[in-house]
Image (cartoon, rainbow, N blue to C red; front, side):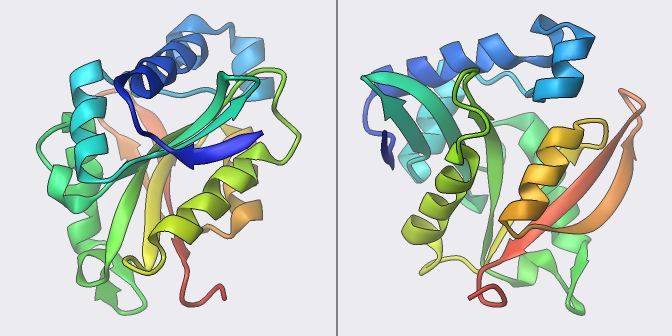
Length: 187
């Protein structure tokens, strides 16, 4: 298994293929409950813009993309509207007595591991790669997770994320949990 930064448009197209296979709308409810899901559907242009600002982490096995973890640094704000909501929230959410925006932080745009590669530690390896590549520039990694995505919540907690905030998305009436991983506290 090879874990690396995204380099090419083909890497980004492969991310889109894996994303499509795991989108909440493309999976039966029992698979969602058991295996997890992703909710945000990116376009190639959006991924290109994210990648230009900061490459994401991908995993390949036998040449096939089997996992990804997208980097969304604050400079991409405005490029992917659903991420803007989380960036806006981060401006005011308190963390250790200050708004998250006062810290050097970025967002996990989405993480996904292919069927057949789950339960093998790849999720943790993708996040450890984030720490290796980005902890010298950022203190916090922040993301939000659908509260009903129990597998993802457990996996994020296992890696080191702590819950920071719960909220109800008024448009979807879905509960979300904002979590953060502080690399300076978790050394």
